[in-house]
Length: 319
Ligand code: 13P
Ligand code: SF4
Image 1 (cartoon, protein in one colour):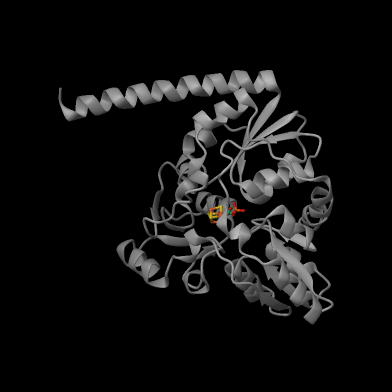
Image 2: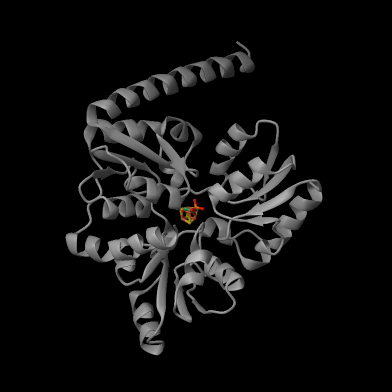
């Protein structure tokens, strides 16, 4: 049998598998009164079976409006944790309990204490990509889609922006009237992109617009035609008259970009734009947590209460 024929048989079997798992997930969801939320970075077949797909802000907002008993969060740990903090009466499950965002851990509590001592009027602004414990030491949470607006509207002159240095530096460039103190955290996927790689891609695709996530370094953002969250990037490309784009974020967004824009062309800056933690979330694991009710998210009541205040403040201030 030829290689092509074998490949076609494998593709057919895989497609049938995906369809049957998706059907089983639908049944289990009804039985358990569960809803599935998915971030744009998880694999496309998981996004396809989710009830809601979006950026971090949309998902944390929608989680507060759902009636279902359980939430399966197809994303990384801080997302499930935030959903649990905002919805203590619901059960929240993670398809993969080890899917975690490394940047969420790139802040020392000692550093927050030191900055608070040095600047008694400081507001600690915490990117939602952070642990529940870090949130308990923070004044307000932000996501990439509302950070500029929230920092602008805070009464404090001094802002300690944690944990992401790149989003912090982008906010500082947009809100020059504030004194923004940065922390050295970063997203390993976005931080490694370089201006040289962007220039090379622009050279290769001269007609393309460059759309970047604010987790990219400043030198990369300086080359961007648009800077925004994953939803922002998708909306911009969809509404733009341009036909070709270079995308400066994790390639999980290509699934929605291509679905909404079948006639447009999308390129990555480099081959390293893969979030290995988001990739851990598979259809099989979504089915498994629905079946077994394992990987439930638990947050102690004390942490939950303290971490809820900055999350609620974000939802309020982002309105
Ligand atoms: P947004 O979807 O909010 O842009 O966040 C990107 C991200 O890195 C999530 O971890
Ligand atoms: Fe964390 Fe970066 Fe993955 Fe987002 S893309 S979850 S910031 S490691």
